Image 1 (tube, protein in one colour):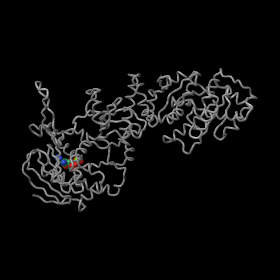
Image 2 (cartoon, rainbow, N blue to C red):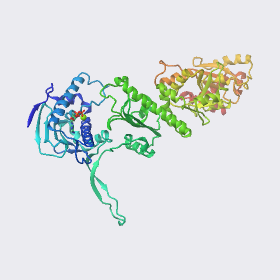
Image 3 (tube, protein in one colour):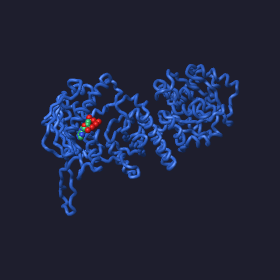
Image 4 (spheres, rainbow, N blue to C red):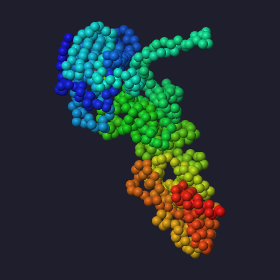
Length: 625
Ligand code: ADP
Ligand code: MG
């Protein structure tokens, strides 16, 4: 038996470790199972090069809880360690690594930017255990070694009774970590961190129902058999070659990842690269909900099939955090802060690669199956728009497949749209004007008016569209986007020669002050227009710029400061009612007509509410009595 003193500067390691890693105690199990996995990988490797002779079988890992004696056992059938190796890897390396860790983080453990993965390794056992034992049998036929340490720098290392090849780690769980003696808690951890690890992990047993024999009686009960409960899937879909997988394999893997998710993904992207960095994974496009924040943080990050985090911020571009799936890369440095991560060259390359793959996939879907792409458009557009706004590389590619749906149910690309409207949709400054609606119900009347005049009206209704429109106007040559209820529409509609004014200039001059006397000037700019006599007497429009800035503010970004509510009140000089306003002799009737017309205009914009609405209803009843 040997006694030794671990070469660590601090007197008692484990209270320190506990303190430093307070929130993350649960990772001890992941670290120990990772070591067990490494030990099996090493054994397989040694066997394949002939250094380990004979059959190695199908090595596995077992996790056992001994609640009565307050112990957890982690047992593997890997390479094991000789006494010398325990000395070298546990007493010297592992602990010096821990010491280094303490040195490195003692000043900045409060930095919340540090990702909860430190690669602390074996040493993390002391976060939950007051005493740790290692019983290990090397694949070389040396004596079995038994190491014990209670977290103080003292350890014992002695020879133990001969065992099978492999390592058993015994954790004597500390009083304040009793939660880890609960089966449910351990199962939760195994499911979170180890669900897709490469070697079978046994945790307890389960009952399996045996099939009934063919000649069984009708009321026969099937037999059950107790079998090992293996908690993991050792060959998850992302580790396979794309050509070996069918559509159904991707779908069933999605269900493994999100058992509570009932909706099927729209399509997937298999990531697979080994140079200049190593990365595999599968990304899924889900149907995008309107609440973008609820949607985020569903991608899981793994390293060599070990779960690390589901916060991939800084690793994948912001707009792709709306997707789901798995990314597995050992090349992402994780023991650094997020801001460092974003500046890291390797991470930048990874992020660019993912962006390119997503753009290429969308592009090929668009080319191969345009109809299918159009059908999915409403569920994927937000990701595409978001990407175009935030990633220039993506913007360049997406410009070819970004679709602009219109109220006739067509989906056109920018190029197609431009060609379709370039002869008819130009304003007096020679700009190409894209008319759009954001809500078919609310803007119905405006849409109809524009369509009657022969204009195409786009249907752009995603929450961030104002930002994208702003960008497109900046990028494309001489184009403007105008919502159908915006004031610039008049520039287009005016071009329509058919609408000539029925009112003379003198009449117009006397009409304007009559309306101004009733309608508050600080909120409405009054403008007389000869419009369709079948339309409304008054029409409200809002300057496109103001409205858009406001929308951009609501969805983040845009200009700061409050924008006043400003409207243009178009008075339709061709309308019978407006004629009446001008001709009527009684001031009271005129005021009533003006108020009613204004309220109708508001009503059509969904702006009539509360007290005003009540007054309008009362007035309407009076008018028809
Ligand atoms: P790392 O895994 O990063 O090398 P650890 O602190 O987790 O660091 O482990 C230190 C070393 O101890 C390992 O590299 C390995 O040589 C040895 N070791 C730990 N656990 C086992 C095990 N279950 N079987 C064999 N060797 C092990
Ligand atoms: Mg390790």
